[in-house]
Figure (spheres, rainbow, N blue to C red):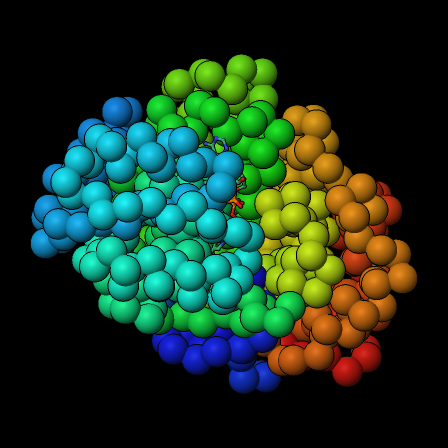
Length: 408
Ligand code: NAD
């Protein structure tokens, strides 16, 4: 779902559009920093996004202070219908600081929901947004902020990472577009580990792997840089440690804390650098075939990693090291992580129609965008078939540099 002109542009495609012929990429700068045996640090550009992060347990109690800090006095609390109970309890806790609750957030931020939210903002005279929930609720807050400039406090309860990005994906008439704007970047993130204890084990695993996907693509991103690479490595490590423990006991606070930290780190990667083939494929599959977001990321990631491995050896070595696999085993390690934790491993089981694979390959190969390895339609079609079947990812099963017309 990630996409768009790096600053303000709109697009219907996944990752940031790129000019064909961008530089070839093999980047593992964080390793070079700590190892005097390596050559000098590569040149890089790093832009930091403004962020205030309040992280801990019981931090929900600090939301009122954060609303006041932003100059708010009438906050509209947002949630999905499923989390309306938590949203109402928060509004009650905020007392006179809360103007009301709007609990209609839905996946992929439909614009008709945003319109109703805007009407509620006007009706209540709200001067601040408090989004309590996963990426869907964060998306609604961002969509309202885009149109009103209201400040946002986001309280994430999944590992999707949207709270740390200036990216917004919206759907209108079944069409998903994505934009990047500083107007949608939340002013404050309040991470309260306690709120994640209720996230079902299955969704915790897929949401956690969704976060890992941001970090994997950040490691080989066109704008990869040492700061983001350090965060990516730390984020993957925290989630890979935590997810097996959460799958075994969803109320394990220590593991939940590790996972939420990892989600912040991976979300920050997503907000800082452009994504590539993996996010593009997930955007196509989610936007055109209505597949579930976190599950789609979980299934596609090992295959996208295998596809890119021949052109991103430094990034893959980093992932392999963190997952504890052999140096060339990153993609398989990602596949095993999902399978061992009972997550879906095939597009078939999450509702993809097999006769849609050709169209998905056409869409993914249609517009030029940056990827470490050239994107060829035939190779992407083969990748999608493997993901559909749930076959283990095979780095060698695809030609390293397809001879067909490709976009780099
Ligand atoms: P979600 O927000 O749709 O949540 C899934 C379900 O889980 C919802 O019913 C929700 O109410 C429930 N839930 C959430 N937290 C819970 C908890 N702690 N306990 C019990 N139930 C809980 O799912 P998501 O995967 O977090 O978000 C997906 C959406 O976020 C997609 O629309 C995706 O495009 C978007 N997203 C955007 C970005 C970005 O940077 N713009 C990044 C990642 C995801």
